[in-house]
Image (cartoon, rainbow over all chains, first blue to last red; front, side, top):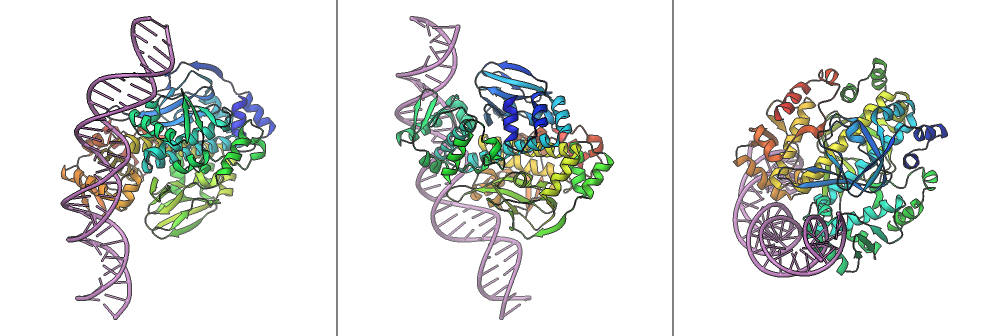
Amino acid sequence: MTLLVDRLRSRSPLAAEEREAILNLEHRIEEFETLRYLVREGDKPSRCYVLLEGYAYRHKIVAGGARQIVGIHIRGDLIDLQNSMLDVSDENVQAMTRVKVASIAVASLGRLLESFPAIANAVLKEALVYSAIFSEWIANVGRRDSRSRMAHILCELSVRQKVAGLSADGDFHLPMTQEQLGDALGLTSVHVNRTLQGLEKDGLISRNKRTIRINEWEALTRVGDFRPTYLHLQSVHGAAADRQAGLTMALRTAQAIR
Amino acid sequence: MTLLVDRLRSRSPLAAEEREAILNLEHRIEEFETLRYLVREGDKPSRCYVLLEGYAYRHKIVAGGARQIVGIHIRGDLIDLQNSMLDVSDENVQAMTRVKVASIAVASLGRLLESFPAIANAVLKEALVYSAIFSEWIANVGRRDSRSRMAHILCELSVRQKVAGLSADGDFHLPMTQEQLGDALGLTSVHVNRTLQGLEKDGLISRNKRTIRINEWEALTRVGDFRPTYLHLQSVHGAAADRQAGLTMALRTAQAIR
DNA sequence: CGTTTAATTGAAAGCAGTCAAACTATGTGG
DNA sequence: CCACATAGTTTGACTGCTTTCAATTAAACG
């Protein structure tokens, strides 16, 4: 639960007793195999999750069977707040890799939010940040060409992984198939392949199995029109957040871009 | 402020004193001319708005100058919670028509949320519903063709307007230019024009100036792959919400679809 | 190792974009 | 109330990015 505390602290300052309350939140550790569903469209979920290890994604199936991935979750993300707090889930959440989560009953979480306004505030902000990421994705899929879309998602994942303390400097692990990448970008897997090759040929990235190395960060952000504002990393509470491994570096990266 | 009370009640039940507190929230009425900006990217907004009259939209400008509209706001919507509660605004909010809003200082809203957990809960849910709409838009822009996209947005706007008590049965007012529609759908205005003509030729809709009549609701939802789950109208608190004008009808519509 | 899954390549087709022009509202000032 | 200006809609011809289909190669897995 330390992960959750750190995440929420980065959104809004929390007093010692509030941090304590989060740490004492009852939960159980669960694991999901690759491609296993954490939540299905139509479910009425009664639990939500903090992602501890691995990657997961949210997706929708449209008429005709095409899939659109609407979000990617990494370590520390609070998953499925949306669906568990509303009536029915309108999307699927699926494990991208083997996944370890802390599973929390919505009822317990509700009591926590009711007792501690500061925590409720932090959770609200966390939800708003997801919202901001969604909005950037709409712009990405709606108004950028394939090359730019690809560059953009690579930049986003790279920064988010750094913030989560998951990746070293240039390299990062991209545990998605090209088909999944396509489903996240509104492209076909064939075109994803060609687009990645294009970026590689131009020396912006290198690929090795499922690992991406960003060779030209500056240039890639330019191609992807990536401005990290929407990730809302430059929290007012930077001092507290800074203590997290990796965040400082990520902020430096983010600032270097502007 | 009654509008805000009704909206929040539809998300979560509120006691009399909580409703009272919302009604007493200090605010001022402001008006914005068509195309005037309520918020600009990069601003640090200190106020958020309840939309009382008119329409507004949120948009982002991508490299190259193209615009993507990421959301449309109608009467009763709580605007710019995202940006005012986070550090910097990452999107623009612009008046689509002449607009009347109740402008609330974020600080006041913050105090309200701190004092009344039930209100905080309702606001969180409201934010999560916006989030769900975003996620559907990603799927719309990413994985549907132009005809389907168009049908989908028409269905969404029609239902939301009914819920807000704004439109009679079949007709609804669509105060957007075709260029704005294109920017919302990731299409060019030229193609929007052709797509609308296509839907009209097939008898699904009729157009008259900026008014759309949906002739074949059933068929349009099929073309648009529109399932209103993501709007989360079927609130657990239907009993309270039902009192709102128009909602009952909208729910009936929504249920008829399934 | 064999089998399945994912990545890659090529050729052809199609949906939506681009460019440019004409037409239609809407609005303004004389 | 008309003439002109402006903004928005409509149309046509052409281009191009991305998809589709199909086949091959490479990687992952038990």
